[in-house]
Image 1: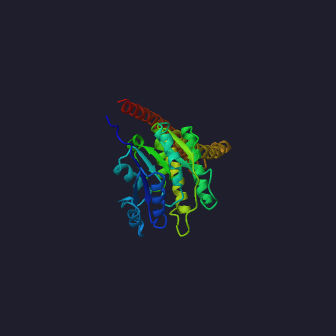
Image 2 (image 1 turned 90 degrees about the vertical axis):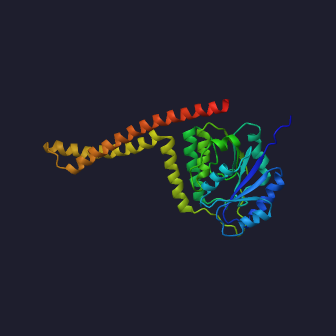
Image 3 (image 1 turned 120 degrees about the vertical axis):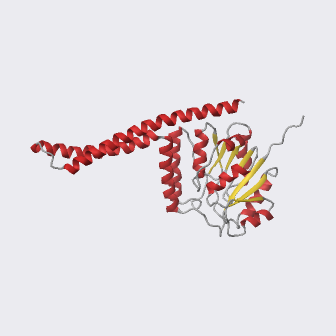
Length: 309
């Protein structure tokens, strides 16, 4: 009886990477010749798609702008046993692809992530991007009791089981953070492989925008905390309201003790309102935390039943 051949695909999301895409495809063709290379072009206005086809890659077009839409389209359209996802800007090393594949092929993890923050030049990262990455990383590690070093890496390997199980809702570059979070939340294992992170070649420009992306990182942090630590998120908001209400209330009490009459009526209303908002926010956090716990418990039970079949 013949065994079914293991299929590996290299998926490359691209937007205006005509300078680098040809080299990236050739490097992976040489490093892992048994893999099929597929480029997902996200409305490039240059010759990215043409060069990819000329270099021997299959090309899909994703018309919705944003890397999140591209990744979701990849997971929906491509069927394989193992998925290598890598950016098309030639900042990642194809020579390390087998090291990245190894833990997933051996069944020791469902996702392997190329950790960039152990070996990179000063020109590879902007200071604010390093700061944002570290901020999100610390939050995710705290929530999931993990010890990851790179949350936003664009070079990773996923198993078929993970790709079929993890939904993607992000539209932009924060999709890497979402994939990492959902992978851990669904009970899948992640391992990291140190990989050097190179500078972009001359003439190639980054699509990242420091302040715009910084705002999206802060929004992502708030979304993560709200979704996965609702008691902490709403409890902290409630505590702020209670402190404001307590300080305002002290003024009202001191005013009343002077002549047994409340002269600062607006302050009294503010104190009462903020205290109610504070306790209400804490109550909401407790309720959502309970619902969240039960949902994740049922999700894991369902996942275990599917795997046991």
